[in-house]
Image (cartoon, rainbow, N blue to C red; front, side, top):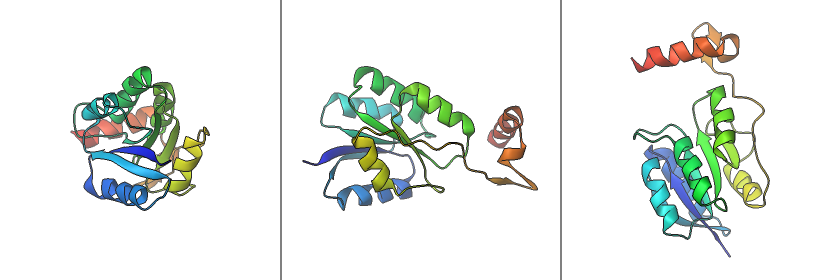
Length: 158
């Protein structure tokens, strides 16, 4: 029996990468691949979703973590694997409080995506100890306080 996977990522390349992993695996089948966290709940309401690969930072007005929280409240049996390329340490805490089952960094992973999916479906929680270190000019993310990182985020968003 294959698990049905819903892929939610607003960027085409990661979405296609996840689709490839799912379609080339004997244990998984693609339920759908969508670009909107806002629409994820509707797909879950139709039934037939066992696992969601949910991007955290989305271009629509609903974040992946907001969608995950809502889905877990109504469909606690659906496993959610949060994925992100953003090295924001606050995402780990927010994902945990949203009920996310596992967490995977797109660029800096400790385990291959398929392994994390298998272990998540087996009931294990795969979680990094901390956000990856990313260079920021002459320093890196570990040298800045949370407040300084927040200010940098806001500045970069204009």
